[in-house]
Each structure stands twice: as C-alpha cells, then as structure tokens.
Image (cartoon, rainbow, N blue to C red):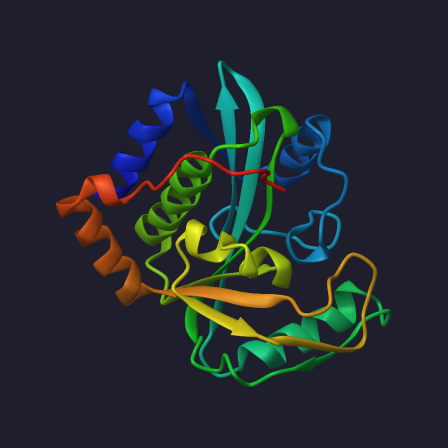
Length: 226
C-alpha cells in the first residue's frame, strides 16, 4: 500500500492520474484514439471474454486526457506449465498462424500469475524515465493489493531489454528465448524476453523503497520511449 501511494503521489506531482477500467473494448478504443495501432490477442476483447474480477486496464491521464495505458490479467497455473499454457492458447489466438516451441527456462513461474501487456504511452507524453518507473511500479503494487499473485510477468523485445527497459520497469528476472517460434505470427518479435517479478522480490522492493524513497527514481532522461 505504501509503494502504491508513493507511485500515485509521484504521478500526481506530474499532473497525472490513473483511471481504472475493466471495459476492455472501451479501453482499446481509447488507446487507439491516442495512437496505439495494434493489440495482441492475449489481452484483446476480440479474442477473450475477460472477467472483470480477473482483468483490468490502468489508463494514464493528464488533466483528464488519456496519455497511456497498460492491461493486466490474472491466470491460475498450478497443474499446467506456463509454456504449455502459451502453446495451447496461441493455437487458438493465432488460428494456426503461429506455432510455438516454449523454452522451459521459466518453469519456476507457477501459481497465481499476472500477465501484463499492451503498455503504450502517447508520443506527446514520452521521454520521462521517471514516468515509466512510477507507472509500472504502481501497476505491480495494484496487482499485489488486488490479487496477491505469486508472479507478475510480461514480454519485452530483446533490443529494449538490452537498453535497460526491463530493469527500469522493475522486473528482477529476465529469461531470453522464452518464445522460440516454429512459425512466427505477424506482430510478434523474434527473441522476445520474458521478464518477471516474484512476489517475494516485490515485497522486498516495496520495503526498500519505503525506507529509501529517493532510490525509486533514477535519472529522468531517455533519448526515446517506444
């Protein structure tokens, strides 16, 4: 709760608020209106009936105007490996156009897991490293408070991982080659990393930032934010 409040206050200092919604169709329309050109099927309302209790969009607003957003979904994976879940889901979501060989290097990700995706910031609002960090850490804290997950994870392009985005977002685990495609569908990059945050790391992170709040934010400069 303290971490969530710290991030919320940091965003408010920059004139930014968060609008929470489980209306995925409306959220996608809002993101399209600010420049997002595509959505992956994993969190799309076109491909999924997403329960309001297990999925959410957090939309960034400045002075009541949308400037960005990110979506999250809770899945329970106790008896099925994460890579098996992807392979089964992708056969349906990509309608056979993508065939996945899943690496087993992330088999430790089990239990109640939160997948995060569709992260987008409007071009006019890009350029702040602090904004990225505050937004993703707020999302982590939100998910922890709402769902108490064992893990949070996302996919990041390999080039962005090398540029330090995964660390800036706050993920403590990085798995190269989590997706190896036999047939890669349109819209998916070769060499994506799975990046993750286990609940125990999030708890330690929250405690550390509570004791050392100045360490939450680094240098507020980026040449570009994609």
